[in-house]
Amino acid sequence: MDFLKKLYLNNLFFYLLLGNIVLFVFAFFFPRMYKVSWLIFLILMVFLAIDLMLLFFTKKGIEATRITAEKLSNGDENAINISIKNFYAFPVSAKIIDEIPFQFQVRNFSINRKIKAVSQDEISYYLRPTERGEYYFGNLNVYISSPLCLSARRFSFDKNKMVPVYPSYIQLRKYDLMAFSNQLFQYGFKKIRRIGHTMEFEQIKEYIPGDDIRTLNWKATAKKNSLMVNQFQDEKSQSVYMVIDKGRLMKMPFNQMSLLDYAINATLVLSNVILKKHDKAGMFTFSKKVENRVVAEKRSSQMQLILEHLYNIKTDFFESDFSRLYVDFKKNINHRSLVILYTNFETLDGLHRQLPYLKALAKSHLLVVVFFNNTELVDLMQKKADNIQEIYDKVIAEKFAFEKRLIVNELKKYGIHSVLTDPENLTLDTINKYLEIKARGIL
Image 1 (cartoon, rainbow, N blue to C red):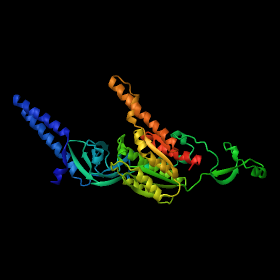
Image 2 (cartoon, rainbow, N blue to C red):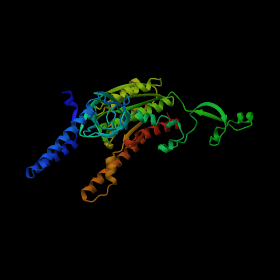
Image 3 (cartoon, one colour):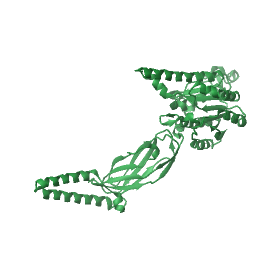
Image 4 (cartoon, rainbow, N blue to C red):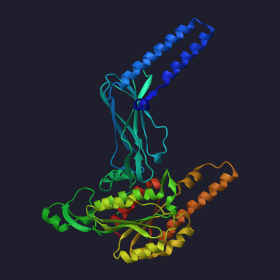
């Protein structure tokens, strides 16, 4: 029975058998073909028997292993590697069918590869998860055919392997050194002019072209007989809290991911930048209540703590309670902090309902409200209108886009900073806003 479970007949065998049946049909009208048809049938059976002997008389014909990272990165292309060893003394044709987790909804995945005799081959493919959680791989099935290609033997490996999907740690690595390099402008960062000197004094150094001449230290210059300047460093140990709204509006999809997942990925990357800048990074989420709290610290385990809390965040589809958010801040965070609030407002009326709480929060903290452009409306506005209905749709889309700009102006009126961004640019724009605030020393 085990033999039959592993045995599969290839299409080539059925095509040849069908041709043989046609010959038998012709033999009904031309009797001389009858013996020829039987001879061809016997030859086909002999070759099939030889093919089966080649495949099944070796116990360990093939060995395959699926190699994945310990965790997958949400929203990114993750490499899945398959290593195959061929122990047969002849080259084989391999059809690889990996049972991919159901979240990807892939039902026709297969890879065909020819593997040389007694050799090893490496195969890679990529998966892009769009939600966090546990992903279960099924069997790694490898169907092996000999050079005769009449039948195939199935080998199964790595059954029921679970791989967790975490917030995008690939983006974290990508932007790890970006905030400290001279290549920021290539990634969309803008240069920020420093206002005044709200920096901590670090040292006196020799002047090099490009240094601010206003920082010249004339006493040190006279002693050294060469130009010397004061060097300052950014103020450190400032608290930065990233607050994620996990209400129903953050479930809006973009490129197969929700706004909530984009906010989670951006929070992870920005937390790393904040800690590398020697500030304190903290976070929490809110909807009907405040949850997933991580107090702002700069200890070595802070990134792992933030990652573990981000991994379990799910929307609850409730209307977010901004009054609860304000009360929690008032009760638990007494010192002035930078608060980066990831939320979404589609209309000016939606903002006005929450504006009293945002204004109260901005009195004690430096508040930055991050919300999103509706990219579908932007695409609709750029599309040419061909009839009256499309003209109406385009006008309504322009009205909603204009309200987004009104929201920015309304927040600015009350001293609240804002970032209006496309979901795909969220990480860059929030890092840029944080660096701008640090450069201007306004925290």
